Image (cartoon, rainbow, N blue to C red; front, top):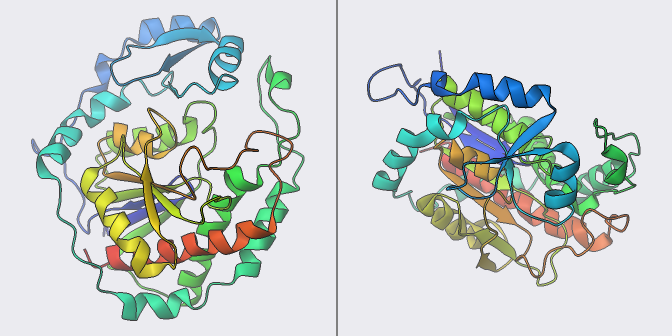
Length: 326
């Protein structure tokens, strides 16, 4: 039996319906056979990567060195579509349907169920996860030019904080033996800095197999917040789901909600959106007030991270319980 599912990850929550999307005329998506495999194979043999910097961009083939020096080190937002060129085509019909539908989500009403689970959250668990991940040294980038970008970068805020937020939410829901009406998935993606590689691979597979997804909520960096807020981003997201997340913040956290925009391909939710799934993006602060030390040796654990990441865990549990009843 295929259940509904909420996919929740450090890159995203995902919520699927309780029935599988069958291969009908209403459910079929683009034909992946239209991919120019000859061109793909030829460029891959040359060690090239295909990068896009906007939805309209047809893509540019670059070397790994050019990708690192001209995109990653210059903080240019991009998606690496080399192995997943069919993703946008697979998601086209789904995206059109989403734009036309713009679902009206129900008002938050499950606090009586969610709050006892939220009460089980433990801030010291979040602290242990963040400090533990930030102290791992044996992380490697495989590639000819890896040494230019793989100096020590502890990654406490980006993104051990997001991992800790989601792991703690997963822990309390497991301890509570919560039985959701929709399937809940907790996702942790690799390769985000390299062009959303992990998230695109996952959602390319989901789209190709007509997996029915109700919602994807991405949380990237939940620790550092100059303004002590929760930011819900407004661009390259699903409008209705985003508005719903804004409504949940004051219900399940004690922090004010703010909004911002981050541009094309700024985090893993963009891969879900490319596949045509409703996606939202929640972060610890706005772009101008987010952690100043990400991608550097100074992205180390700070005491103030833990309470803020806990607020994101509260929001996570609240969302998952509410979404279980859609």
